[in-house]
Image 1 (cartoon, rainbow, N blue to C red):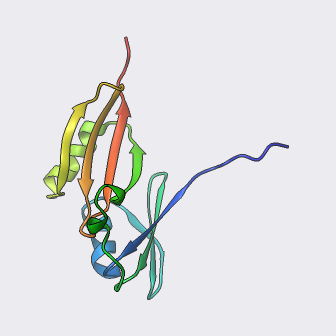
Image 2: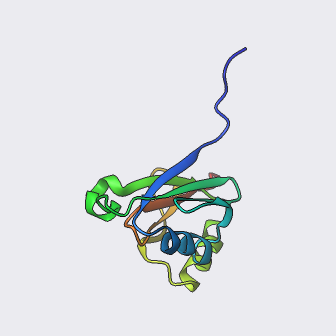
Length: 124
C-alpha cells in the first residue's frame, strides 16, 4: 500500500499567544481547537494552525521574505477578501488576477507572518 499525505498543519512561533490567537479568531474567522499556556491550536474549514508562544525569538516580520508561511486555496475569494477588509485586516496586496491563473490576495499578521490566499481562475 502506498502512503498518502492527508493534510497539513502550520506551526507558527508568536510573541504573545493571547494576542495572536485573538487575531486569528476575531479577524480571520478561526475557532479554538485546543489550547494551554504555551500552545493554541485553531481551525477554519480545512486549515489548522498551531500557535506556539516564543516571546524571546526574532519576530517573523524581521525575517523579510521568509515570513511567508502559507498559501491557502479558497472558494469564493472575493467574499473572503470583503470579510477580512470589513474587519480591518492589514493587506500586503489586494485581491487581483495573477498571470499564473490564480486570483489572490496577501495579508500580514501582527507577528509579521504573511499569508497568501488564492483561487484558480475559471478558464473558458
